[in-house]
Image (cartoon, rainbow, N blue to C red; front, side, top):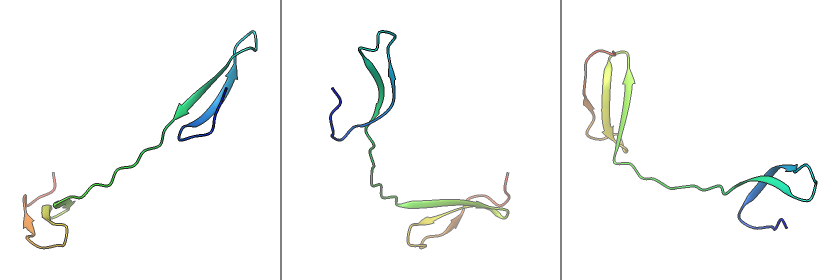
Amino acid sequence: MLTAGPMDFGSPVPNKQRNKLFVIDAQPRGELVSYDWLTWLIPKGLWRSRTDGSERLQLSFTAM
């Protein structure tokens, strides 16, 4: 018996006797993450800074 709830059911396929139904179930999840640092790569090199843009520092001088 399929029920409604937090699971998402999809791709139903019956067995050969057609007395069972096979489905793929999924439970979508999310996560909120907070980072202290950002890093980015530009042709002039690798940089990092705080998320507010402060404490910017160049880590390398050429992109590899």
